[in-house]
Length: 149
Image 1: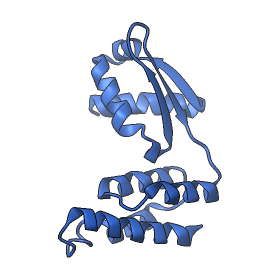
Image 2: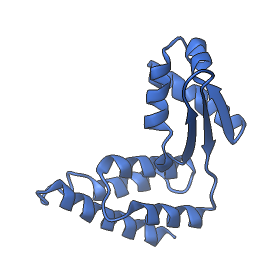
Image 3: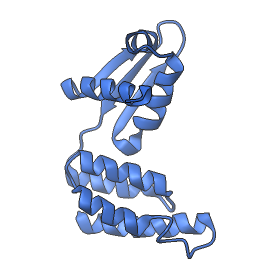
Image 4: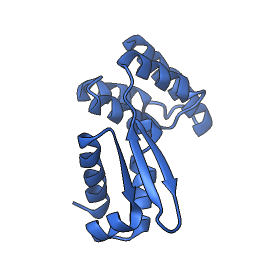
């Protein structure tokens, strides 16, 4: 297990105990044997709103990170996701949203793989411009999610 996975696992374990957790960067880095910038990296890449987290951060002396897991009724969650997608979405963001839906038990891994296949760069490679591809992907993804509501 690499250090990023270890940091994520530690924070997720804390969040499983309580819905939100407040951590001090330096203390967490010391506990896990890493540097504070590694904590920042994991927070910014793995605890995103797309994955269902709200992060508050204060830097400087005594800086802290407060991470909350957002709990929303399933229908409301899907509508929130649909509304937040906007006109375009990239493949990585679709994967993050699907991962969150699987983690929350809203869809199965098999369904997530099917949706990911429909929204992948490979499926949309006939569309030359990435901006156009992301717009088509958003339309497909939103229509699939609407069918799940």
